[in-house]
Length: 418
Image (cartoon, rainbow, N blue to C red; front, top):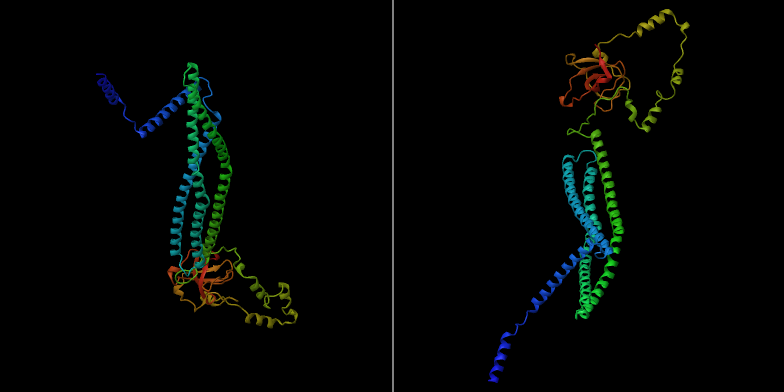
């Protein structure tokens, strides 16, 4: 009977023994317990702040706030520089497309075509170089700088957790002492361990955060200087290229050629302008060597032979005057007489009087600048004719005949002869 009861008790103990717990599940529960305990500790710290307590480490709070601000600012700079790079790429593509269009319009036989093509190609190279330099010397360093934040943030978060563990252990020790609990020694050991871990993390964090925060000044100063230096060089190069293209367009505007290789004019000149101002210095020296033009006006008058009026007989004077009497010629014949020294315009026969549109009289002297322009002096008569090619008509210019030659002339240098 005794043996039977013993077997029954054994069966009962075997039947009532608890099953073994899963280690993974136990670890998960332990972690959840720590998380819950830290949340409770945060609430206690919050209530402590509201009641006037220090509520945690104020110095660390300042360092953490600076770190978070620093991280937010770095994220914004990287985000905006990436936007800028994308916009710069679009601008470079638009500039290249415009340059290709200009090269298509700018014909090879126009003035300075090769130089213009090279300048446009140089602009494309300038954009490409800027993008590469910005990426290598600013964008990539900024990304590397931003990559340091996650590791530091892990340390900061770990320090936060250890701070909560430390405060929880401290409260547990104080409570156990007040109640005279037998677990005081065990809780004190936990508190010592938590305090040691917190101190180790504090030493690390309080060294890293201020150094990293203060280092932002040197980092941004150096890389912003690099970026703006590259932008300054880029804009200077673009300005130089744009100036070269502007000069090329000026040359095209003034000396460009039309499809039939004839120079076009830029409107009639003003009567008060000295047309010969473009003559080179060496050409002026050659003109001074001509005997008829050399010397002062008084010297040329002294060279005229003197004449004794008393020695002339009256009949001889009258005869001489009759021989030298000048008759007023027909307008067509007068226009056919070329002025002295005139070599502009084309030598042609007098026009048919029926083709003459009007007769004009020169109010100012004009020296033709091209082979197809007339040269005339004040009071010269000019027969206005229709343009041989209506497409050559230009505002402010007329086509006429004078001095045995025909050509174009500025209308504002003449007036109607009546």
